[in-house]
Image 1 (cartoon, helix red, strand yellow):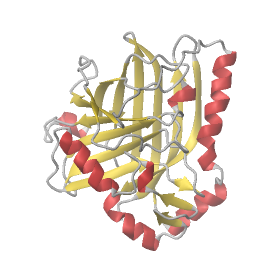
Image 2 (cartoon, rainbow, N blue to C red; image 1 turned 90 degrees about the vertical axis):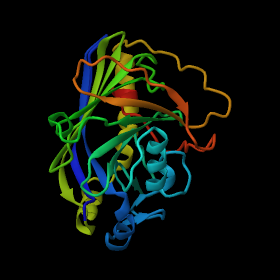
Image 3 (cartoon, one colour; image 1 turned 45 degrees about the horizontal axis):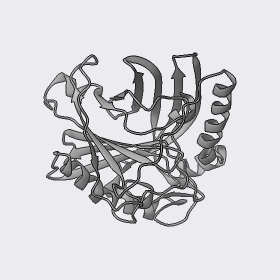
Length: 301
């Protein structure tokens, strides 16, 4: 089975106007979406679309519908100009524990066929106001090139308010290392051309089995509430340090529903920021779930 757990750490580091940093342990599930039925059958304490100690729910992602996530992701990247002849999609995420999850960011790795090239990454970013934005990051680098086999970098305009301690304007640098025995994902936010915050997860692979899930629950039963506790605790520390609070823009009105940005892989870290059109996603309006979703950048920044 390809699906596994990554045990590691999240680190957040604010660079200005005051330095502020912290880190905490985190366990992420790396799920081959084709293997979900097998995981449901063979991993005790883990269910799909059903209550259990640990559970994956389709409605926790994308447009919030109870519909096959793999099919919806493939349609999303196809509409962004990346057709997949044989979609093979992996998801790096947190799962519900006793029905509860705070998922600041989930990452979909979209390959064309088993063992095929990485064609796109979808970064699903949520905030604590029940809003969600999808960054569809197209990998148009030559699969045979050295660049495609190393960390893949993307730049995208910031398109959603995520924290009262961060500006709504700016752009993100996303960094995704190749998935293997170790894994890392990084985001660097820029404001007015200057780096403001970097956030990174790095972890080590461990098997996804009934035993590993049971051990995780036994040793870290409060893992599901750790993120929200950190959000409020770090927000209080930032406020105490005198970091300016930026008001949240008015919520968008109309029937746009879930929104999507599209960006391409940058061949070098200093590539210019491409224009990233913000498009109305082909999902019904008002279907993004508001429960149990948080943005780690919300407090770390």
